[in-house]
Each structure stands twice: as C-alpha cells, then as structure tokens.
Image (cartoon, rainbow, N blue to C red; front, top):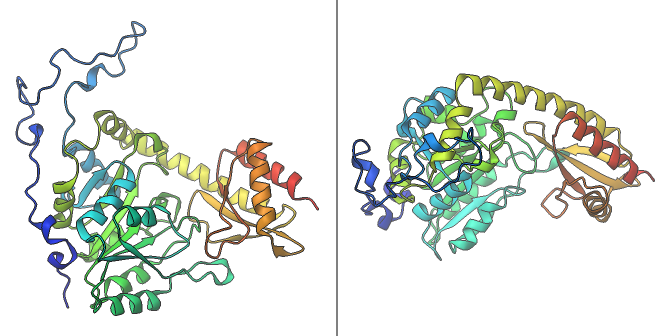
Length: 387
C-alpha cells in the first residue's frame, strides 16, 4: 500500500496547533512584542577589543527558522529547498522529536540494528517505547545489514497491535564505521507493509566516499517515508555548538517544526554554523577531512602491527577504528577492558571499550586524532599489549 503520513504520525500531533512565536510574524522595526531586554545583554567587556558577541543581538530571541543557514546547507548537500530541512539541538533532539511525533507510549515499537548508537534505546525508554532488535551480520567483521530479516520483522509487525513506527539505520555505523549501501536502504523503503518511517543516521557521512549519503534517495527518488539525519559535530568539528540536521519531505519537516521548542537553535550556534558553511569554511572542512582520512589509513596499518591486536572490525568510513584485542590469537574481553582502563587512568589516553556490544567482543573504538595523537595511542597500546 502507498505510504501515508497520517498513518505514520500520531493523530494528536497531526491535530496540533503549533505555538506562534514573536519572530514568526515580524522581525524588523521597533520590537516591543517579545518582552526582551531592550538595553541589551549584560556581558561585561573584558578588553577594548572584546566585541565578539556585540553584533549578535543576544538580547533578542533567535530566528525560529534560520533560513540563511538552511540555504547554505541546501547548497552543500544539493537539496532543492529549505522546506526539506529541520534544524535541532544536535541529532539527539531530532531523534527525540521523531519518537514523539510517531510513537504512542506503551503501544508502538521501534527497530534498531545492533551494535548501534545507544541514544535510540535511551529515547525509547524515556518515551515508553519497546525496542525490536535485528542485529547486523558480524560475519568476517563486516557488520552488514540483514535486509531480508529487517523486512520480515517489519511485515510481521504491520499486523500487530504494537506496530513498528521507526526503523533506525546508522550509516556509517557507530561503533562499526560500516556504510549501508543505498540499495539496501531502498529495499527497506520499498516494504509495502511497513507504515512507519525509515531514519538513516549519517553523523559520520563526511568521512565516507562521495555519493554514499541517503539524501540522494530523498532528493532524486522522493521517498516520503525517509528521514536522513546529519550533524556539524563530526566532519565540521563543531560538537560544542550542538547543531543537528534532518532532511525529509516538506510535510514531515513541517510536523517537526510544529512541535519543536520555539527558539531551539541559538543565535551563537547559527552564527558559528554560518561561518563553517561559508566558502572559506567549506574549503577548511574539506582539507581537514582529507587529513583525518589520511591519518585513519595510517592508524589502521599501525594498529595491525601492534602485538595482540587481532584485526580491525567494521569498515573505514568514519573517523574511528574498532580494534579487536586478544590473547593467544583469540579475542580477550577482559584484557581489552583492562587495557582500556590502564590507558585512561595511567597513560591519560582515552579510547572507548566496546566489548559488551553485539559482535564487538574485546573491541576498543579509537577515534582518529592528529598524527601525534595517533602515534601516541599506537605506542601506548604496543607497550600494554606485549606478551
């Protein structure tokens, strides 16, 4: 059956009359409508040259729409119009809002593919939504999507009183770094029995090959049941400003805008994002991506030369690698956990232990750093993993 947004979204959300904020109607002239402080901000000037924030009108509420910023994102990602873009306080706000618009607490369910990003399960618990798991196939350390099984579960759930309303596909995966082929995403979108949304989380997409983003499925093929999430936290190195992006059809984007907080993206965040997305910012972004990807290639080869690092699991489409630690040629979860702890507490080099996640026995997830940091982590691991 054709996809219907009315079946994917909760009826009370569809009927919601959105809050109209002061800047939705007028944003020029003498502004006496929003009970702002007319005398301006109370930030003291620490020196005569410290005017960093003065031009940002911090005493005014920010734009509720940020159209100039959305226009730059359209240019970067070849999206036809800002109507396809939602901005949130990091991707985590987007995830939470997707739960709230689609899942009835205590009734509906979501599908995830472990090992994957932990916030899907956290948001599910907060919203009283059951999680259905279809694990990735860890064969040969590749962590591929089991498309047929995902579709079987979605079809089976379509006749249940507890339907699946969201399907999260993390690509590149976290902690695996594995890209999901667009052909596999398309097969899930094509499931005629599934009435929910397919959400592709692309936090690390900028470290992967060109043409890998599912935004192309939205723009070129127009799938109405697709949401793609991205962020400026990773590739653009702006984790502190908390800016997440969702791409979808204008009708779904409007629903997200209807339920978000009136001024969710702050003026400083928008100003910094505009700088990052300027022509000079894009040039710097691409240079840094190239450097980090080169560092990743070096780190992968170096890690495979470390004693008792058995293999690199997953793929190399992100800014991290997942190294499996062993003893006697076999994965050793206790040793991996011990190395992680000693690295952090004694060597002051912090990586992430992932040995308790599905298919990731004895694994350490290591972020690609500067070349000096990559050399340091390899040296510390070599010292700790010698027999």
